[in-house]
Image (cartoon, rainbow, N blue to C red):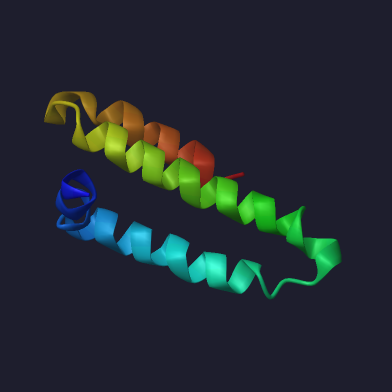
Length: 77
């Protein structure tokens, strides 16, 4: 639980975590026909953004350009 607490103290990660929690509440309200197509696409996009943010945070500043370029690819999907 300590790691989760430290994770949430970083502002961008806290915002992404809150976005995911809020999305999960909305996902349960999706019509059945959209829940597993559109719903999974949204979940995958949020997960990708979170993963890229965590990866960028754990790398030296000079290596972060790679993650910025990867996030641009994710945006265009």
